[in-house]
Length: 144
Image 1 (spheres, rainbow, N blue to C red):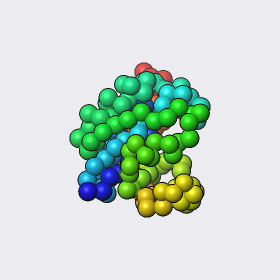
Image 2: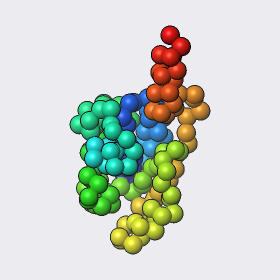
Image 3: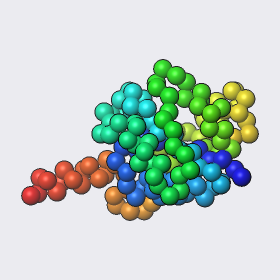
Image 4: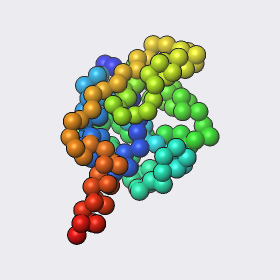
């Protein structure tokens, strides 16, 4: 059974997240999702709307997910979680700004050359992303 790892913030769960996790699950038999640590989200993106403990609980409740764990804080190297998760495949979302080649190179440098890095397809819905949903809510509130 192949072990798949998916990563993300998962701040406001939506259909795009579910699609990503369904696609990731289809790559193997066991799906572990790494939820971004609150401090990492603050450093790299924005102030999280929900805390990482709640985000982990919500994601772990989704049908495709076998396990959800909270990722490392930003001062810990992101690849340090690999010995815990032991993935055969790292599934990247269609809109995640990670370059597959740089991840593969880093994995090779760290001795994880057997881990595949695959990008899954996106959902072709209008509201497939958190930022799109927030923008839509703001538009609706302005037009009230």
